[in-house]
Image (cartoon, rainbow, N blue to C red; front, side, top):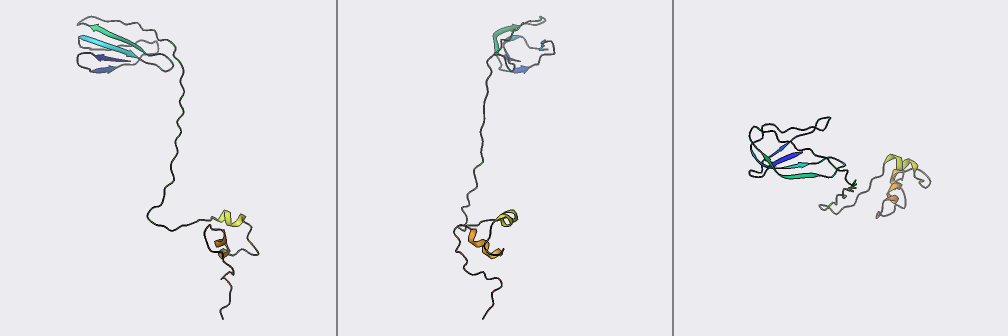
Length: 131
């Protein structure tokens, strides 16, 4: 709950105890607005509450059950777009290499055939004899 001095716009806050009691101590004399909020309840506002010197001002408040609102926030991070270079890269991890059906034998050079946009290797260079 909050009280706001109508003359100075100064605000003070207080919380209720387990029995719903609240106290604002050492409040300057003047006119105040009292606002009370609680989860699951409608808000309460009392305007022009007059506070005078050496007098206790009591405001008994009953909050009404409010409507339950639910909100859903959906957030997604955009993929970073590389704008500094025009090269294309592709990564194949060890799990992908082990699980992929590769023709004839497992030669790391035959993996180039799996990369989009790459020129297919016709003859593996590994193990080739030079003339």
